[in-house]
Image (spheres, rainbow, N blue to C red):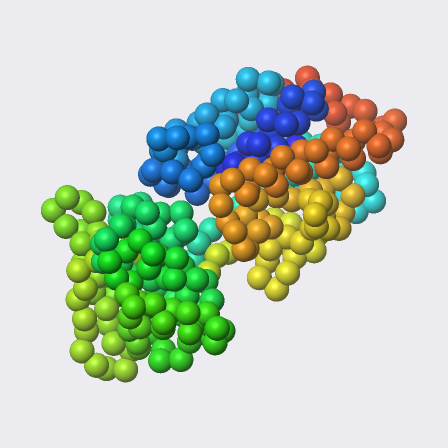
Length: 330
């Protein structure tokens, strides 16, 4: 069973279905992950002319389904993982589904500012990944919101494309390491704006981001910037809440694995994608770990004896019935 979708979950489904492991994907209502909220994707191998994020995720899903993957388009309400290598249970509504192996691929969500205009202008000028979208803002005015190493790294990368980059931070002091802050300061087209917070994003006549209003945190005058691209870099939150008390996680909630494998601390439980990765967070790296998780799960199932009382839990017919029941109820 695979909990979660997106590049990691769907790649894991593709590999496990081609290996005749009868995977069932609990893909959630918002299947496809963050790429469903992305417009042009130009940095995924094989798409020479780029591809829209939702189209790309549909193709991932269709390819997995071609080889027999089943899907439940609903949210997992609870996950109960066996600690001794037994069978694992996932609840979806009133359905209880069991499997000998589980791949966790629930992803992560960018931390948002929660200001007016942010949701409406997401993918229309407001982004959460400069390394993904910087090329769309070549020779245009941009900004980064944040004060840590990620913000500095994103700003330095963005500066290679954009006309100028303003780094907006709520305090005069930055959390970023000295070396990362120095790199940003050395770039001729990067400006540090402190102490400010984003008050609101505003659209232009074309419906895309045009204006950002900044509020001074110490009572100074507000500022209005003409900006084509705004990148929010204040952190990510992994969607590990269903399993954080069962598998090992780090201080930020990312599931820990026995690198270079995708094995968690529990036998038969593997994790992939942005649920694990707080460094790269790219579609291609997520797909790669989804592949690895599938191969790890296949090896585990091959090498681990099946208890007699667990045979029925891997019965494709019973899993299919659970999937159909959940689908009809939703």
